[in-house]
Length: 459
Image (tube, rainbow, N blue to C red; front, side, top):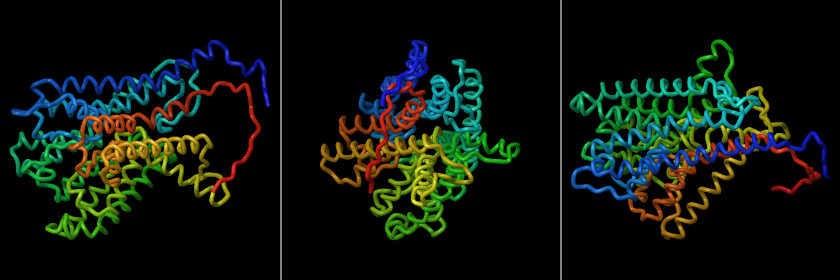
């Protein structure tokens, strides 16, 4: 039925306002694309490569894309193929990609004309009625301070442990690089394919693994959750987003640990020479890192297919939204599970004494659906091109899309086409969910035509 009235016809001012707000996602996309291009040029500089090594444009592009998207997939060995200057450049790129993404998220949510508070976890709640960006600068400084605090604390703790084996200066560089990379949930490291072994020989050390696990979890929570926890003493309540994130994080870590420890290949082949306590700590860290950190301390390609599938699911789900982590986010999964549970019981989607808005459920469905389609399409494309194992390629694609950095060894051997496809997948995985939310958060244009509803047979 047609419905026309003077009240629902958008004015020229309304159309201009909507057009400016719609530009937000594109500004974000172009901005990060330019960062990748700048990083490519920097990494191609002659002094970025180690002695007797050459970094091609393809190598530089893929490494820059992986660093800016805080993924960690590599086609060149960070420790051996890049000079000290190149390693610093990579560290700077992933720091910019991690912190810059969060602060940019806040700024562009404000640019689309919605109030974004820490307490509501960057969810669009109500119109601001103003284009001012007051408070965004203070919020950006707060993000930087929290980031630096975690990274410095982690680096000092790791340095205190590792300096007992390596010279203080060398141990400090290892600890600093690993702390920043781990907090940013990036899989870059300086121990891969070196004679020092995983984590510089500390891969079974419970102290090092606990510190790194806490850094991964801290980077995967996001500023809003910290703010909510700090103000809980005054408000005497936690937001639904924080409850979702804490519950899902604990559940996924425990579930991942159980499945990893049940893998017979872990005990018979991979960690046969390790004690049971070392296997426990290494399994726990792998479960934590699988949700987008990607720091590898055991040969993943030697694990069973069932464990590979568990890791794929953990990578796809990721951690909290608008954090250092990727994936569809634990909040999205929690919303979908709540909606499914409510539908199965014939009730509304409610949990923890709160009812989820219909638009929240719709956004979660959109994010999960589009993300799944991107992963499936990319996997199909690469499978047709390379004619290789589906599990191996699917693992690499999900790792790239979720910005995790885990690999079964296929990525270094890809040609330029495969590198470009994975680089695009990493880029989409980092910015795709945000742009979907931003697009859905736009104020809809008043509809001039309303059609009658009709149910569709499902199931």
